[in-house]
Image (tube, rainbow over all chains, first blue to last red; front, top):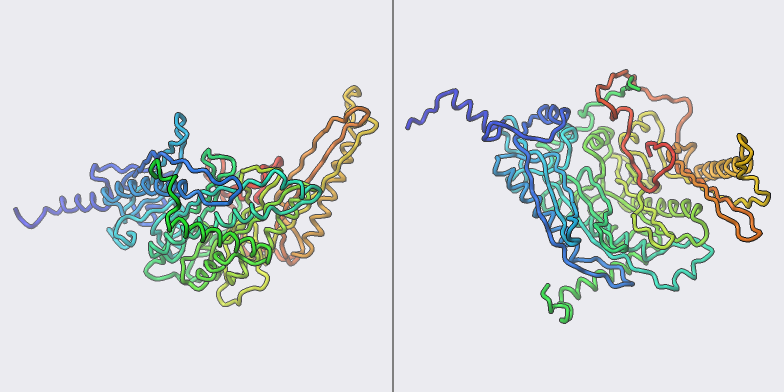
Length: 271
Length: 308
């Protein structure tokens, strides 16, 4: 076999490698705007990547009158999301993707069993058009990000690149008040300090865990953070605090503030 | 966990974790009473400010870009909660609850060495426990490069893009003002509902509403006075209830109105310096140019939705 490959085959292979799935067809759930902006940012979509995990969440009851983290549930939520995410990432790596943008992470209850939760992570694997490998995560695998195509473009133009979708979770039992506790508060508005404290602790735990993941990914910061609460059909006093965002690193060189383009104010003439 | 593990005592690690949790909760309670951020939060904020831990921003990348281009840098997400039981008044509880949460949010921002908190969202967990509600604020503390930390950080309950838009027009959003008022009316003469009369104004109810709404707005004005010279009242919430009277008792009507606003400090007669371009937006239907996403989730407002 000769060491020299024909020129057009080389081109074709280069094309396959840098801008297309091995089947020659790319798949994505991009909107038109997203598609155009991801390409404008210098990337090409190669394929939808999916990770799924159906998880049986164990049972844990909080003590009636105690504020406490329900660590069995926290761990379940964490573990199941992690499994779904890592499966999605493995599929992206197998495609040769440099990263996954627009990751949507959703949780569904399966109606026939209250302990079964389905976790789905889905996003579009992308490669850098010129084969630049500097966009990969710290471990050499594809970066992950829940940013839309538009956000991805904006992030690169702000001088940062996505590294990893990071999250922190805390499932928490808020203490019940005693039957007589209400009597002392008749006629005035009082703060329920125990409840306030529960919110503080649960949120702090979730944010700390997310920040810890970001530090482990060697990121400089976390952008697009959403801190929200959810109740996945647990008892009334049980709530999950969830912090999620995209950990980012500066591009090779941080952009000076005055180099960032000024946006233009526009007035829409649509109704 | 095995089937019989529950009969064993806790492991040493579990014991240590329980002790730590108890310690943290005690610290949170003491800190709330002493008007300071809890120790664990304080440590996290200071590490983020010093660059020893990753910064955390609730901003989108586009917001980060515009904020950075104005010399602002994110430090960390900050948050505050006050969970209030309405032993006295639901309506007025809202002013108290948000007021307390705002004070606590400023404490966290100060501890982080911030000049401002942007993108502050008003949130409430949907637990619905015992005629009480939590008032939670979550936002991003930022500092301005070259400025010393503020002893009184401003709090902007608008998204970061709108914050920068306001700054460019020399308007500074400063905090939250709440105007809340309720009144009961006993309808002794049965004049509120006169269905038999055909087309006629129910003067009693009109008057009740007008009084309640005007007082709420007067409250709003006085609450805002300490924070800025104007408000952008984005959220109006009102409800009216009828309660049947008992024997020989009149029907009663309760009207309540809550208005929540972003306070601003604006110099009069200073329009923004940008040229305005007229654009045709080719989105079908909803367009990001003339709609904004819902920012706060504490009130399922029964009025038209606004930007707040």
